[in-house]
Amino acid sequence: MVAVCWLMAALLALGEAVPVKFVDCGSKAEHIIVDITPCPSLPCVLHKGQTYNVNITFTSTTSSQTSQAEVYGILAGIPIPFHIPNTDGCKSGIQCPIKKMQKYSYINSLPIKSEYPSVELVVKWELMDDTKNLIFCWKIPVKISS
Ligand SMILES: *[C@@H]1O[C@H](CO)[C@@H](O)[C@H](O)[C@H]1NC(C)=O
Image (cartoon, rainbow, N blue to C red):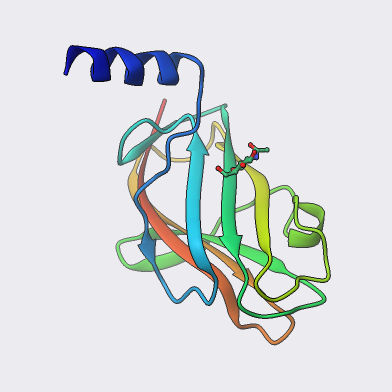
């Protein structure tokens, strides 16, 4: 137990990615791993003025020429669009065209602006293919903090 705790602490200190437990919201892809760094536990505490690294590894079950991301903050059940620097998945670590049964890592960042309110909300991150079908869709609880 002590050894496990020490190991966890060492990993966190190194900023090593620990997969985040997420709620799936209609992903077509398989074997999805959501890594948000740093986010050692849920809800993810996101500090204003910081940028968080997002790494989503998945195996696509469809082929697509393009991929477009949409991010929402869901507050009291209402989805509010969240700004991300680049919505093009093909410029976020994914080599397009996306091929069936191929593994990809989608790499992006989540900047937390200082003007954001200090609230708890759910982040929903979608990646859509050519036909607007969801390659992945996941949700995690976060807490925006100063
Ligand atoms: C993203 O995560 C995958 C699987 O955990 C890993 O193999 C890959 O190196 C990571 N990429 C980056 C840029 O962190």
